[in-house]
Length: 262
Image (tube, rainbow, N blue to C red):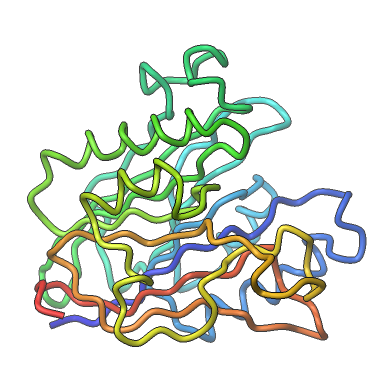
């Protein structure tokens, strides 16, 4: 039984608006978390091309995924994985729209910007076990887009009778319809974990320091798994560096294995 560490992490896009928290001041700390927690597979969100180039320098990891657009708003939902531990069998990126292609606003349920889902089929080299990872970032404005995006992804999963994990920044709290779509078909790893470390909230919504109480933060980053994945332990990582977080989101980490007996 191969133990796996799966994580989702919105690393906060590179933007000059962040002033003292520019990417150049944060990237070493983001990398520190990836390496110190020895993450096997990481679904990333809000990745700009310059950030992707920095992360592709990590020697242990390979990455894949398309950008969501060809303009200044382009971002990737890249998936990083340990290239010595896994073989990538198949991968793709599809758009969260009526056609699963890049569409105008009215055909993506009024999502403020194009949204995508990147997925990969992996094989563990040592054990031969195979599984799928779906990594996504839902719209921050349109609740209808989040709901329809969740339905679209679940439709894609219907034909997969094998281990599947869906992860990402869903921009929605557990009371929303999107959550009920996923939780009605999959297991929320954090909610069902018998051993969880850290808060349930995953996004400050206010930047890179601890200005608010935990109850004012947001629970919008998730890992969902089907019955073929065991849930051994989960963590929401809140490490600080010189008093500041590396991102305005916290990584969510699942310690898991394939087998379905917990």
